[in-house]
Length: 309
Image (spheres, rainbow, N blue to C red):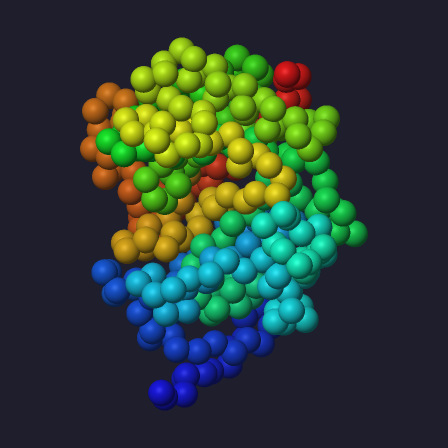
């Protein structure tokens, strides 16, 4: 096996060693590591605010999306000294450790470092850490719409529209994005009173929608219940869980991106627009940001108190 081709680069005053830039990570579209790094550099101005101060879980695909992958939470041990890290309590799925040393992506060199590791996907929690690394209360609500067999993004659009109506009625200001795979995710910036508050509220919403249209929506996770229905996954609000970040690549054959949408695009799907109209690659996303700015800019939106349940 040949040695990897390595080179040193300077980015924003940081020196990095990158390797195998011509390695194809998405064979279906011939998308290379160099293109992955280039995308993350160019999308950084809108991506970084969404991951700032949120411990990152990487999904790494060192042999490309056709090879084996692994999640990496305890990633600070091999990060450069200039990448900020934080020690957080270990979730129940990480056995044998009480804490994890996780990285915080704060600047363009951080993204280049992670992309060079073939960390194609970036997943973050709905909470941030403070300057001392202490875990803050959740500041985002998320409802992950996962289409079951026989359904797709159009059915998700119908459910997303209904969720938007509920959230707005409760004083929240929701945004929506594609998952980059099959579904959608509805978010809202919030203030809450305790860590479990978002889960309680999201679960209640999911159960209410299921009760109204049990033939279309399901709130329970059992796979046997899901054919022909959209799962409203409220459990993503568990503070031990993460969701793919806005503008993150997805490890799918077409090098698709989890892409913020306008609510008019959701309505267009409900009215019969082509589902492919909301399937975006990297150049599509960069063009959308140039034209529309950040459609997911929750920091500029009213952060409302989450209703009591």
